[in-house]
Length: 566
Image 1 (tube, rainbow, N blue to C red):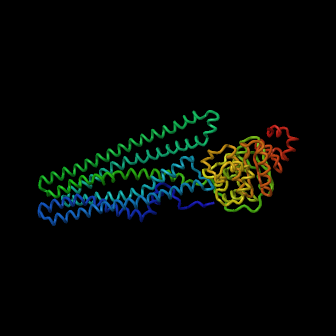
Image 2 (cartoon, helix red, strand yellow):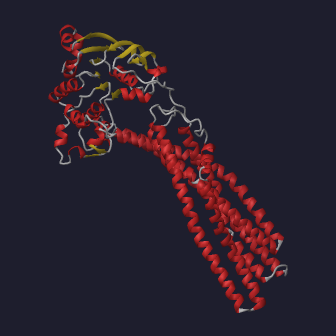
């Protein structure tokens, strides 16, 4: 198993610091370029003021030409620095979002599940929207610094004209940011709740799509839709609340920025009227008052984006910092395929005890579906060993001492509802592309007719969840995948419930033939599969109550005869 990373971020703030640390170079380049952009924007009204000042004094064509050249340099600097600065920052932003998406996905794909109370749809939202918003911090910080540079340059230029104008810009900027920082905290909390509700709605609709067929079957689709509608309505109301707060925030920022710009303009006008500054300085002051609206607007929006990035980072931390459900061992199973269940008590199981010798084909007739499901979950290591009493031994070694990857390489448990993935028949049977048993698996699972139906054969396209296949075809495709893996121990849970009796008979014989010499356990009530097994164990009320061949049990056990007869 992949060992937990001790450096894995534990909190949202740690995630943001990690993102900033590994993008220091790109952010530095972006900050310099965006700083040049803002400085060029600031220099434009300053240059206009100087042009007016010198033109009035010198009235020289040479000075005018030099001034026009200076303006051309400023405009070129503004254009190029913005273009290349945003290119650097957006590339870093996109790359960082990709890194977090991969890291969240890696957590979800680890053999040991993490102890986090999130559905798959919520994890999907975290791996996409939250990863993107967290990575936005890469752009936010340089833009924040460059906006600060612009405001400071404007304040210094105005201060050179008159110290009171410079102080007015600085004091006004501090006051605006103080007001907006308080408002941004509410935006961050609201955004985090909105993201959580949207994620829950996404998880709900994903569950509904997965169970659409059975819902239609028993008429539960309307109730399920009503349930989704309620969750979606909650998300809508929270989104409206956040939009209102964002609107108030944006309106307040715009109003405060306008007030500051107006105050600088009026103050400069009064000073010029009082002859304390020149006409050129007045032109510069009015131009800067108009210009600083943009960096102030950008500067005032940054706290909001920082809080949104932090809210998303906190949600990512729910996944990235969640502890594993169990800490598995590090050993690998020894050669051989014997399996021992020693007094296991869990859920519907009550001191379940039996052994399967290496190379044996054993069928388990479970009278209660819950017992079968609990038993399959334990063998699949979906239930951590500390969660049940007793022990499961694979090749003489306890399951708790073995690495999860090693267990799953040695023992494959194929559930009755195994997923079918978008791709082709071949990629579903042999996802890794390394199996040499694909032809045998296709034939044993009676999937040959499906392959023959299509010109592409095994390269026939399969839609997500096998939407273009029938129930029986999906089940046989899942069985082919399990057989192609050719593991030492194979556990099948109801592999033939969706096929007809004739096909079921052939599949049962084929499994016995293909798995000869390999340990095979099938949890089933199919008479054909039970008859093909070396022996049958009867699982009733959580314990093994009988053990013999299928035909002997039919002759001697009336309850068994009733349970498996079709």
